[in-house]
Length: 304
Length: 139
Ligand SMILES: [Zn+2]
Image (cartoon, rainbow over all chains, first blue to last red; front, side, top):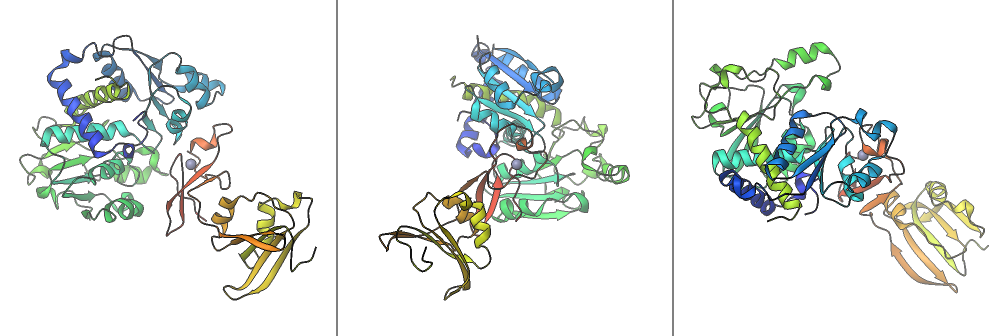
C-alpha cells in the first residue's frame, strides 16, 4: 500500500493491521513518540476542514514528526491556477507524506498518479473520506471489541452522506452485519448502494423513517448531519434538518450498551442532553481518529 | 476499388445498420489517403441489415473504441485476397478520451490535460464509471 485514496484500497487484513497498531499506540504512546522524527507531513487543504487537518497534524506531532502545509486554496498556488499534478510534484520535494483535501472529486487520485511520496485522501468533495471510515471502524472495534455480528442503525442524510456509504461498504465485508437505514423519504439511501453493496453481499437491511421503531435492536447508532448545501430551497432544509433529533426520550428502549456515533460537526441532530450518556461516543471517536491516522502514517511510511 | 473484394486491408463487418458513417468519423478514416468504402444496409444473416466498412490498407484500428461502440463488430484482416485474421471486438476494460465525465465536481473539469478515463465496472450492464469520481456514464 503506497497511498490511501479510497477505503476499498484496503483489504480486511490491512484494516485489521491498522486497528492493531492504533490500539498499541493507545496503550504505549511513548513507544511511538519518536517514530517519525525528522519526517514531515504536508497537509494540503484546498478547502478548509479544520477538524480533519488538526487530527492529521496532531497525529504526526505525536509520532515526533513535523507538519507543514496550507489550510485553504486562496493561500496556495492553486489560486494562481496551478494544477494538482504540479502542486503535488513541488510539495513532494518538501515532505515525506501528504494528506490532501480537495473540493473536486478524484483530485487525490490524480495527485497519487504524479506523487513521489504517499498520498492520503483527507476528503475529496462528496466522494471519499477514507480516514473518517477508518476512524469509525477503530471506534467500533474498540467500543464493541469486534467488527462482526453487529446491527448498525444509520440515521439522517443517507442520500448524500458519503461517510455513510463508505461505512456500509467497509462493514459489509464482515460477518453477520445488519443495517437499519433511518431517513426521511427525500434522503433515502440511493438505489445503487443497495444494489451494488447491500444486495450483492447479501446483507440484511430494513428501511424506516421512524428512529424509534427498531432502536431496541441496534448495537451502533450512527447519526449524520443534514447539510444545508445539499438543498435547493431553505424550506426543505429547515423541515428535514429537525426531522431526527436524538434525545434522551428516544433512547428509552435502546440497548444498555448501544454505541452512538457521529462524524461531527453536529448541528442539532443530537441533543446535548445525550452527551453525558455513557453510550455517547462521538467525542471519543475524535480521539480514535487521531490514533488511526497515526497508524496509517506509520504504515504508509513503512515504519514499524 | 472493387467493393466486393480487397487485396490487402481491413473489413469492419457486422456494424449495426446505419452506424457505419458514425464509425467512419470516429475512426477518422476520412484522413486516410487510400480508398475506403462504407456500405450501408447490407443483408446479414445475423443482424438482418448491417453496415460494412472496407479499408484498402492495413492500418491500426482502435479496437477499444469499436468494442465500446458496438461489441458485435467483427474485424477481418485481408492479405493477398485472403482473410488471414478474423476477430471479435470486446468491451474494453478501460476507455481513454472517448467519452467525457459530465460531473461538474469531477477533477477532470479543471485539471489541465488530464485524460478522461472510464473503467468498466459491470460487464453485463455495460456500465462504465469515471476513474476519478466514479460517476456512472449514462448513454
Ligand atoms: Zn469524473
